[in-house]
Length: 411
Image (cartoon, rainbow, N blue to C red):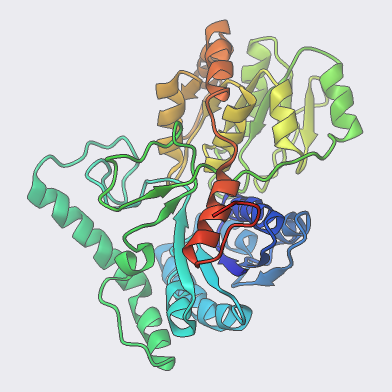
């Protein structure tokens, strides 16, 4: 079986595909991945023996400006990505049996699959954004949902219109160019009635949460056996477990002054601090030896050795910290991040710092709760309940979906 997977988004959108690619290859499938051409994504896929086929601009070039992208930027990027998908996916899908799409509204992927007769799957890493009476579209999770049925329908119809405004013209132009009729509702066309949910069922329960017939697989985790760098090992061994602070692929969205705030908050509890440089470029605030900076490292190993993880609430970081049994402080900024912050708090495995701009006092208070012995006990208990076989589950489902026997499974 040959599978083409595609995404456009941050590392949290790319690494799960690397995890699924590893599982598919383990079952004998051939895998290609169309993704943003950022260097770290190329290296990530090389770890599983898959070459990255470039799709659109690099993510870092889009999000690393001094300010978040504007509405005008969003419209320009939407058309650019739709056009890129028609071109890149058509070429990359040669001889493939299935096309799996995820990431930023992958309009154009289903259409290429339709033209070439491939099985199409839309996968998502959370339920926020799927039609649901539990979330207001375009609002931070936790905003009260409309109780009136008419208001509920109206809100999601407006959301569909918003997606149409962004992607409709480009999508239908591309469809016309390959001899396909136009679609009226881009969002529902892309999502399908049965999207796959690549998230842990405990962290992200889906039953009754959306109108769609979601297929939960569990999170697609890429196993990581890389050793930690010697300088990081030395820092970890030199004292009590530090507090990890990282905001991943966040750049313009990272809280202003977060490195200084985090270091001072950690020191207020007598804790050393480990800063993850990330796209925000976090750096030491002074020359004291109680702070260390790391680049891209094995978080699966690292999070088992820290006192707490302070992060932005991306799906991948939340899952990795949860599997490691590390207490968390989540400082959400955009999109689905408030949802994950809420789940961490609800499960009792950490704290949701819902003010997106922490102060030393507020972050210190959140850290105090996360560092409490009871939070650690709860986090370690929940870690034992999280499934880590999601990529294998999804790989087998994909074999079955295209009508091929799963290797090694009697049928």
